[in-house]
Image 1 (cartoon, rainbow, N blue to C red):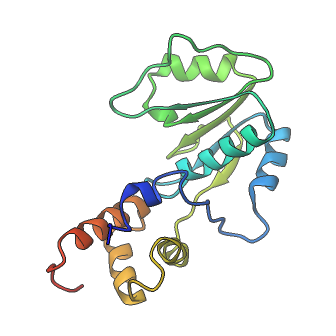
Image 2: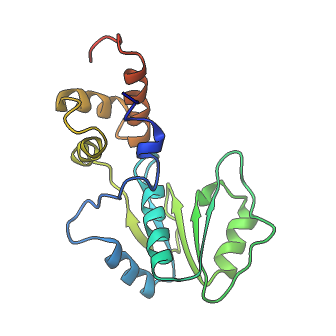
Amino acid sequence: MENPFSTKFWASGTIPFLFSKRSENIETLLEKMRQHPICQIVGPHGSGKSTLLLCLLKRYGENGELVRYLFFNEQNRHLPDDLTYRKNQVLLIDGFEQLPFKDRLGLLCRSRRLVLTVHYPVWFVPVLYRTQPQFSMFVQIVQQIAPGLLEESVLRTVYERSGGNFRNAFFELYDRWEVPDTPPL
């Protein structure tokens, strides 16, 4: 059996985002974005910010809106040369904090519609959503990927060892699957 914890099964965008409150969903966020065309998704590493941003990207695509998704990390820290700032375009910026200050400032000053992912709030940008990892959410995601495969006590140990970082917890589950003789948790 193929490793169910391979990133092709759980990477950002492959599973739906789980909201911490039942009253929240993509539609409520889109409504909030109409009120605040420049906003941010805030949360710790591995808490679902990218997954939520990709869910928004999908919804914008379904609505036929002009949207552009840009991802930044330690290897990619500069805006693309072909970036344009169109009035009706939504820019989804994943990894805003990785950009140099001048690029961050340029995006904030020139963009009409912008959603950022950040670990710490940008002080003058309204918060669209705060991701809050919870053990119950982690269990739900694991059950979507590998129903009934692991006991909740094992998942709790992995979750706690990761410090609530879903990404790191999934990496550990992947590694444990690849090495079947790993001592039990």
